[in-house]
Amino acid sequence: MMYRIQFTIAFVFLIVFSAIGQTHLPCGTPPGKSDWLKRYQQNPNQFRNGLDTMIYLPMTVHIVGTNTGAAYYRPDFLMESFCQLNRDFLPSNMQFFLEGEINYIDNSDWYIHSTVIEGADMMNANNVPNTINSYIVNSPAGNAGYNLPHADGVAMGTQFLGFDYHTWTHEIGHNLSVQHTFLGWEGDVYSYNTPTPSEVYYDYTLFKDTLILDTIIIDTAIVEFVPRTNCAVAADGFCDTPPDYVSFRWPCDSDSLGLVKQKDPNGVDFWSDGTNYMSYSYDECQGKFTSDQSDAMRAFIYDRKPGILYNQNPTMGPITSSPDLLFPVGGEDVQFDGTYLRWSSVPNASNYILQVNRLSNFPGNQMLVNRIVTDTSAFVTNLNINWTFHWRVLPYNQVNTCTNFSAVETFNTTILSSLGELETVDHWTVFPSQLTAGNELNVVLENKESIDANLQVYHISGIQVVDQQVQLNSGINDLKVKTDNWASGIYIVTLETPNGTDFKKIIVSD
Ligand SMILES: [Zn+2]
Image (cartoon, rainbow, N blue to C red; front, top):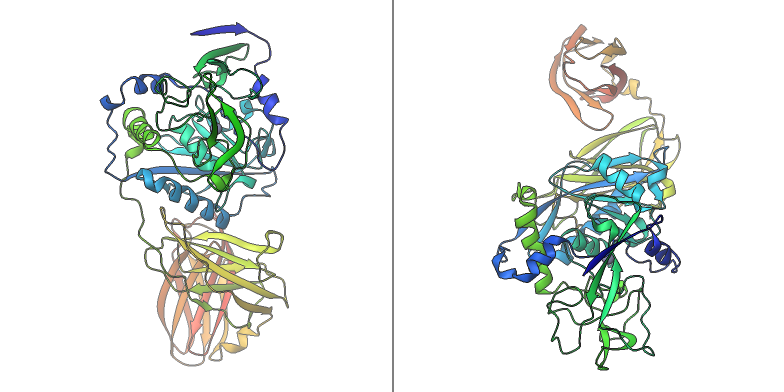
């Protein structure tokens, strides 16, 4: 049974949720079964779920900061959260991979938003098709997280991500069609002292494909009996998830059972099972999807989202070691306004997170560099003079982010009399120091004797554009460097000779 009521305010359940405490916030996903899930549960065996095959699902991660580009969720924390997500989905033979680069969005209104309507705007403006879109914000409409079926995206609060947190897993479960184990009780307060009804009503207005702001859509959920006689049609419609009527976040005992004693409509007592990711138990209670839930999520992908299965060979493989930091190490002196950092490559790693910090425990407010690099070196600029810095590197690939940082190394910043170290070079210039990409760059040196040297040019992001062995003759040498297709930005021209290394900066514009 379903009916519609005209209302001017459609957010009654959101107001109820936002009144609950801060530590264990609820999920803001609009409750309700999709038409697809209803059809699926009438005859699950007619749907392909390919259960024996591991499937790889592309994930676009959007990290939302403030208007000034501050307060982004840290990439190393993202790797921990993503590791936990993949651990949670491994028993379902599903793994997510990081597709494309992280999409950083500067928008204070989305960073802390108060309604899912704003969240829908954020998703409609940024979603990448044929991937699962996750938005990491500070406050997703006062919830720990939510999934919006009509906007097809998941929003997550930074406080509810990380190792041993399962809210992301829960919201992705929603995104793949699975509902709460207590479906129908959302926004309702169960009481043992009142007779348990055989039906409950829930609002699933926002579950529809469009936002109908002045219409509340109410549906009926049949209340599930303890003996499972009506499990196929009651609550979430899965017979391997036991009855559960508790719609606020709850702690569990050592058997992962809830502390709230409940009775079904026939008066049979029970306590909720806290192990399910789709219940409202605290994170430490949770640890599984049931096989019926897994089957439904996989069938949903094959039936409704086959386009996201486009890459079943993402960059993966175990990462069992950490990089060795090669330079600079042991507190050695480097040039204060620009230095290379180099580390060893790690098998199966495609990316590295490089961090440079004032302190050895790497707090966020002392972080000078927190950058994702695809190479095993990077150029770091604008460091303060006469400081000690700590640095470390985290390897990962598209699937495997359960990795460990390298050991921490240190360096000091100073003014190196680097020109003096190029003993055989009288002087060298690079011109023009500001040029347009495509024009020729001149490197001119006057040399005392013939030597072999190495000329390298790096974009300040660490991307190398020139790596060239050069023979320098005694006298004046004029080296021409092509700059076709160089991206705009600051570049560092480095000359490495047997007698020392020196660098100069240039600026390239489009
Ligand atoms: Zn939920």
